[in-house]
Image 1 (spheres, protein in one colour):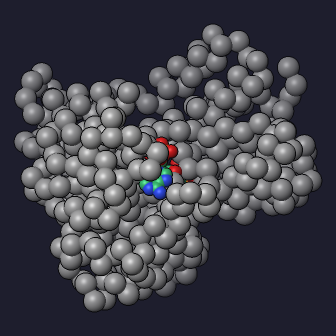
Image 2 (image 1 turned 180 degrees about the vertical axis):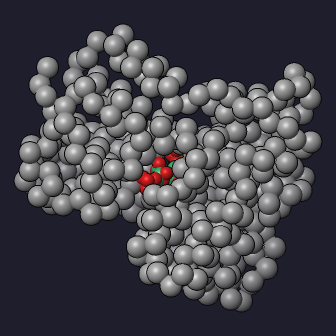
Image 3 (image 1 turned 45 degrees about the vertical axis):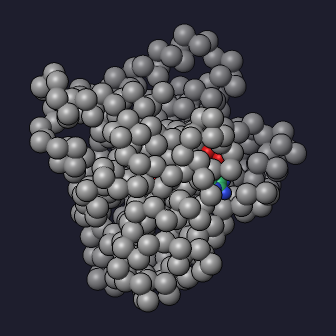
Length: 373
Ligand SMILES: NC(=O)C1=CN([C@@H]2O[C@H](COP(=O)(O)OP(=O)(O)OC[C@H]3O[C@@H](n4cnc5c(N)ncnc54)[C@H](O)[C@@H]3O)[C@@H](O)[C@H]2O)C=CC1
Ligand SMILES: O=C(O)C(=O)[C@H](O)COP(=O)(O)O
């Protein structure tokens, strides 16, 4: 087999154990990759911060681009098709981490969420898991997603109706063109539809909510509880927005330990299949890496679902990351990525088991595992 030259974002976990046998791995900071870095590359492995387009690939012979992320708005897929470049993403890889984030936000800022109406904007891998979890727990729901049918989701309704819910979770991709664009989906015209005491959680892409408009809206409606993981113009975010938020985090909703590793595993599988490697060998490697890295499940003691969620993830601590960075005076343009790079090892809910073999925590953790399908 050809020895490949693989250029990869340095923040992709498990590069050596997965890709080491396929060739040389050159690790670079994803945000700053340039065409000269790719001159001799065969394979490019990225995360969401690298814009992969004709300009980046113009000097290279790259024939496979893999993004270890769910989102693909940083990839120029039209160009890949034109240029015959094979590409792959990692759908759903960190959906469990984002759902954990949304549940932690609800447990922290609306602890009585189970008796509220929850609106979900975008009901794919992330929104769909959240939907199935909340539905199984008997929560009232409203969903907006132009690509779903009310046969599958009876709670399907208009965006404006979803925005009247007590809690609104936004999980759409960034789509700039076509019939159902999501850029500035939440804007000056529809922010006033949201109840001034609602909880708004945004964990899709920053440009889905017009941040400048949100800032102006919060100045006149400070009771609105906003949890923002994703921001317009990352990494150079609108820091004056921070004091108006209940919680602001540096795009880490999907940064669960499992979520990041899943992204690498999925891209290794896609690349190995494209190289016609024996499926048994592919599976053996995937299993070995998972066994080695994921380790044993941990016991979780809690008296309520909120307690269980917050025992796995104290969201307020993540809010302090940006606050401390602002206090330090370092420009957010550099601080934002440093916070992401140094992010702590957050295990998903699925990593935990309940030592009691029955009861509401046991049932909840079973549910978390069952909604993956
Ligand atoms: N904050 C974070 O760390 C993370 C953010 N994300 C973002 O979340 C997005 C969603 O992730 P998945 O659910 O896994 O993607 P997905 O592709 O499985 O689902 C997206 C859903 O949004 C729907 N949608 C598209 N246009 C819409 C519109 N105008 N209004 C309402 N719904 C619309 C689609 O029909 C689809 O069902 C990703 O594309 C990514 O940008 C994903 C992972 C981590
Ligand atoms: O998977 C996605 O889509 C995400 O938003 C990732 O969690 C973003 O992580 P990075 O690719 O920016 O490290």
